[in-house]
Image 1: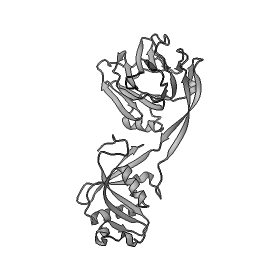
Image 2: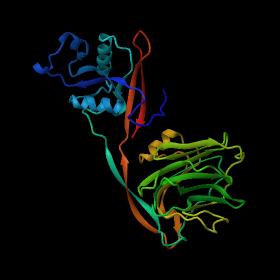
Image 3: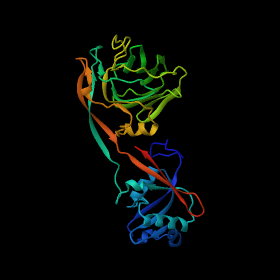
Image 4: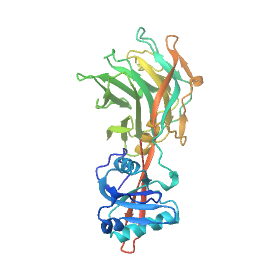
Length: 349
């Protein structure tokens, strides 16, 4: 099992163990008391109930909330003992959902919803001259990741450049561009060392904000494009046998047909939260960034308009972005007849 699955909806399901404060069952819940006793274990503080329901994590969480209880966190020794005792009584050996013990709460909590405000740059439709320059010196790079949030002008359907990095000795070093297809989707493509990769990764031309990350690594030539936390395209190139040249210029909203100038393919819309790393981000990093988390390791440039200079037609605006609450789901597995347990946790949003 890997952490590649990144939503609460899994391709497989596990049964559910809920915990709640002990209560007396009413007449409407009598049922088969002998069978229920196999699925219920009482401690001094909690009642553990095993439900033979095959659900994904989100469904399991909702199910327990509907029972006025919560998924077991297995945080204290009594929690662990209660779960093991219950599962031994029921002769159960399949994996079960539990909550992340590191983030366990005393009572069920709703998923957090937060709106964060970002300073953004507006590239107006009435001028093809708009651009912004990141004012920093770049070293030679054997790995790079660039993440950015864009709000595309849905009325513009021509090729647009989100960002372009040009070096003194080679202008088309690293570039991200997009164009609208016949189905009304925005297709994205990378240019690496002058090699134009196919338009494939996409998102709807809906006027909403979208989070885009691109990564590249010299050692295997691997590159990837992520949209809203999902890997939408990837591959490896044979023409990537050198570092990305240093001492270059990073321009937002325009291509560079010459070093730092000769702009011909403008972007129209809004751009914010552009960050650059000298590493190839993993999928888990990208998912966290899409959910408005941060990653400071190997960070070359962190979004700050004090370090960005813009053409006069480009204006600063405020972007209010919805950031989904991150949840952590865990799987408790039994790996031996001696009831050894293995706990694996994954992040989702």
